[in-house]
Image (cartoon, rainbow, N blue to C red):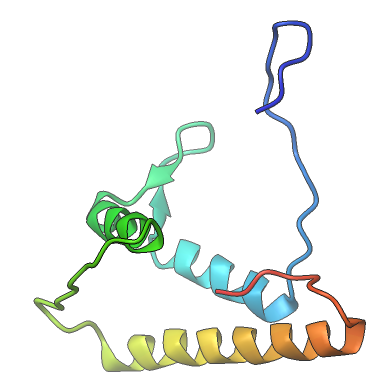
Amino acid sequence: MQADHDTWAPRLVDVPLSSAVNDYLLRIQQLGAVEGPGGAVGLNPALEPVLDALHHLLAGGEVEVRVTRRGHASLVHELRQRVEDATREVNLLQRVAGSSLTTTV
């Protein structure tokens, strides 16, 4: 956050995303990763422990993940394929550009 004369307001920024990353993010949003009406959107509470585990892992910790009930196999496969497609597309774009231009999932 940047302070501007002791005031702060949210601002939009441009983040270049490959189309496959964008499609993945839209799909997980459609599937309920975030919920709530505009202006009151939040992370689905079921994802909070997953995000917390990710933060600990990224901060040098160790985590254990256990699926307690399997989801619909076709959706799981779709999401895995979307991640693979997004990663492949990002790597291709970065090779062509010669630098890091996009974010991957």
